[in-house]
Length: 272
Ligand SMILES: [Zn+2]
Image (tube, rainbow, N blue to C red; front, top):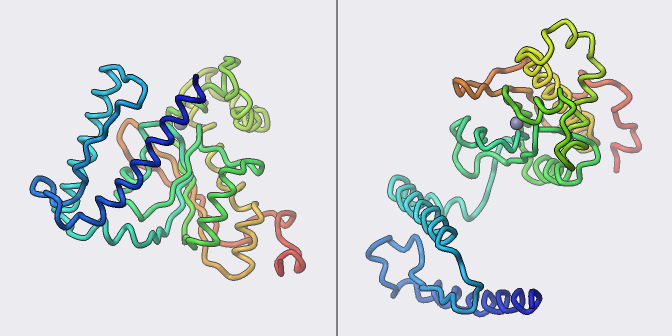
C-alpha cells in the first residue's frame, strides 16, 4: 500500500508539472491583479494525496503565506530582484556554521540571498571524511570561486555543551566525538576552569571553531586552490546569542604559509 501511495503522489506531481509549464507559458494572460505575477494561481487538487491533519494544513498555509508576502514585498522594494537572482549566483563567501535555528547565516551578517553559500551541521564541525561538507567546499572553491570561507561557531552551542558531558543521545554521540577529542587534547586548560562552567563551554566552542577552520585549510581542495594562486581567506568567528554580535577569534589564514608543511601538496599533486 505504501508503495502504491508513493506512486500516486509521484504521478500526481508528474501531471502537475505539465500544468506548471502551461501556466508559465500563459502567464501573460493570467489574472495577476493581486500579486503582480509573483506566484501562480493554480488551485491544487489534493484528492489523490493522503489526508492532511488540520494542524499540518494550517502550518503549511501559514508559512507559504508568509513566503508569498515576503516575495511580494521584496519584488516591490527591489524590482527585478528575483529575475536577477534566477540567472546566477556569485557569492563571495562560503559559510560553515551550526544548524542551530538561532544562527541564520544570511541574516546575522546582513547579506541577501545569492551572496553567501552555506553549509551547516551540528556544532559546525569540519572533518576530512564528511563527503557532504567536502562536496560543498569543492563546489564553493572550484566552481563558485568564493574569496572567503568563514567557520562560525556560537557560544551556548548545545552540541559543544553535550561534548563536555557523558550524556548519550544517539548517532550524534559519534559526531560529537570530534569535539570531545579537542577536550582530551587540551584537558589541562579545561581542568584550570570550574567544572561544568560556562567558561569551559566557551573555550571548547572557540577551540572547535579554530580546529575546524584549520581543517578547512588542510583539505586538498584548499591546498590546491592556494597552489594555483587563488586568493582565499579562511576565517574563524564566534556568534554570541545574547547580543547578536559576532566575535572575530583573530584567525585568518590566507595561504599555505601558516599551515603545517605536512599538509602541503607535492609538485606532482599540484599539477593534478
Ligand atoms: Zn550549535
